[in-house]
Image (cartoon, rainbow, N blue to C red; front, side, top):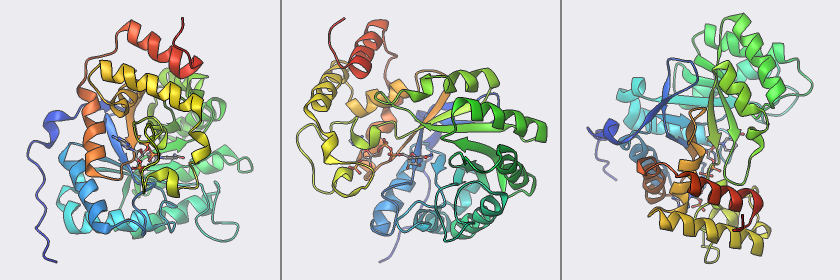
Length: 337
Ligand SMILES: NC(=O)c1ccc[n+]([C@@H]2O[C@H](COP(=O)([O-])OP(=O)(O)OC[C@H]3O[C@@H](n4cnc5c(N)ncnc54)[C@H](OP(=O)(O)O)[C@@H]3O)[C@@H](O)[C@H]2O)c1
């Protein structure tokens, strides 16, 4: 197949809103693209390429990966690296590539968690798969109960000092461990840039201390799975579509489509409709409604979905009454006061 050489859209920076990560110099788009699902070897390469390039054309400069994204683990980095090589190489200085290490990536004792040994070798492997000299952000992907936080943070500091990463971040750390990590990194001279956590209308754990720590310490927040993997969209409101994530992912189950879920989500969908937006757009807009959450890292299985979510940033802010209505439904599951 003859491929038309890619030339980025000249208007790519006109629509997107960029938001600062904490008290750093780095801005990221309000909507970022994550490659956890839909970018492994089971998914068509041309669709993956189309989504990645459409993202960049819409002003999405921030791409979120991890060593283990696939399947098989590593495939998302290799597939993204192939698109960088074929299309995005001239734009390398315009994109922020993030990767992580923490989950199981290889066999044996050095294949997961948070040792210096694992984190630094994993970063080298990620760079090889991505075909890059450096990543912009290197995260410790999950807290390790058995490794001192100092050791994992010293590995992140070393990753930055060696030039293999520009910034350091953590993901899935609770508030206390986050504060410990922030303090250690600050002493080492590599301030924590960003924390990545699960946050959406139905998942409020970050509101129990983490967001306060980040805001006080000037660390940026980015929310992953802001659409609850599709459950906060209209995807499942009229049945289960063929090929949807719930039909093939081990992380989502049809048991979650309860009567309560459907009732609540239809009611949220009605609020979105009254605002002339889709539920996906409303869910994204809600996640980034405060400055502490700089970006929503979304997934997409098509360019159409990504276009839908990206335009969420162009709607008017929520009124107090809308926020109250949304909170009653999302937190308490009721329409009543
Ligand atoms: N740090 C961590 O531990 C961690 C964990 C999880 C995720 N993440 C990051 O967060 C990223 C996003 O996670 P996620 O994929 O779960 O995010 P998500 O945005 O909550 O879910 C994406 C899924 O929602 C559906 N969807 C997306 N846009 C839609 C739209 N406009 N209308 C209807 N349905 C829509 C699609 O489902 P279908 O596939 O059914 O079409 C899509 O695959 C990941 O790629 C990864 O980078 C990080």
